[in-house]
Amino acid sequence: MSKVVLITGGSSGIGKSIGEFLSEKGFEVYGTSRNPSKYKGSKFPILALDVKDVSSIKSAVKTVIEKEGKLDVLINNAGAGITGPIEEIPEAEIQNNFDTNFFGPINVIKSILPQMREQNSGLIINVTSIAGYMGLPYRGIYSASKGALELITEAFRMELKDFNIKMTNVAPGDFATNIAAGRYHAPLIEDSPYKKPYGNTLKLMNAHVNSGSDPNLMAKEVFKIINTTNPKVHYKVGEFMQKFSIVLKRILPDKVYEKLLMNHYKL
Image (cartoon, rainbow, N blue to C red; front, top):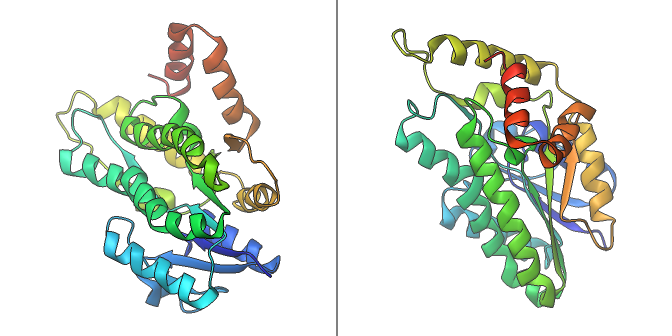
């Protein structure tokens, strides 16, 4: 029987690429979106799901299980970008980002665990970010929310071992998607002490996304992970230097690494 896959945020960007690739490989794929009516031409069903709304999560999971009788793979892909000086980002926007990038995925996981435990099988793939391995200037909230998801996956893996449920992280670098358009950008305030460095960093970040890698690289990596008997704890997907930056963080003194980041962002 084909494996049944649920992808949060499966209507565009990386999630859409993963869904289309897995559909072509014979998987039964269900994507999700807050507004599924906008994606009627999708190659796989798009269900209504808002990761910040537990009732909508439970409803979508219930729909998949009622239709398919099982749920083999969850891909926690829904997420949101956020930029700005930490001092100037409204608290409500910080909370909103963690609700989407951290608490949301946890609630989706909690909703599918009873079914996977009953099956005595399942795979959960959390899409994080290479930015979650380091505190990046003017992306500190995003780094923190994705880093938190990386760490909680490590804990979850050990807690789920007795139930034959596997979990892993996949951290993408910069990919050519519409994430920049959907980010919350703290406004550039005219008399802000951060106006010049934040403005320059913002231009650099958007340029990286616009020239990013093909999202199909993520799709192929996810396909390989699904077909791996014992997935690793962490996977990284992206350009060599982006992945190598994680290695450098492990081996370089903290201040040296900090200086490299500041030079990169021209701070």
